[in-house]
Image (cartoon, rainbow, N blue to C red):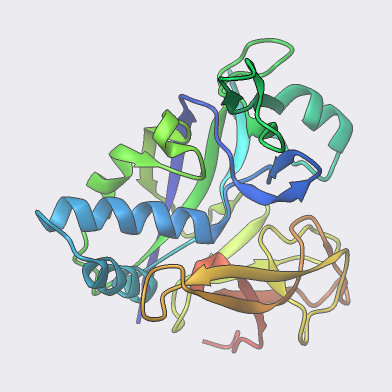
Length: 283
């Protein structure tokens, strides 16, 4: 199986909330779009575009086809300048990142007889802002989609009408497609990772000392960083019924530790999770 890589750039048109647990009354957001969130948004759009009145099993079937024929990186926020797009890596300067890109929205349900806030209903939702907080620049999300040679899904049309994350009923997570173009063989993805599409799954080559750009399974991975159990809801008999554990992973931003003369290779698996692989480089 051969894979083609496409650079995909979205402009964030409304606030985006990428769920990351709760602290007190605050629903936190991740500072990037995960592969699971992007897979869910793409599956929803494809299913609704391809089937007039889809059932739950249609969503499940299309979702499996997306896993089989498509893969993606995580999508990271960026701003535009004369030289292109400048990535904002949240792990490089977390305080400045939060100041520039994150805000929150507080609300509560009302108890009308008492004309007061209902007990226990105050909550605050953190979000990625569509414009930088300090300078008002548009915020973009940049990532890569990998397409297998047998793919017939109309994924490019679906990318023109994507909505990601939580609070979508309020219009949050609306993405405008700015660019979708194939990359050349010598292109470094995110300006730091080499792509190899000649394997069963897309493979990225990362040099020693560089950052991991997705959750990466900790088994057999030599890296320095925080670990996180990656958990999400999946289909069982009904959508979201089963809580699935995808593995214990190094978080994005963890540093690859290897001999400088030996780069590390990672396969892009389901939900954009990376898994370290041994690759035959003699081909």
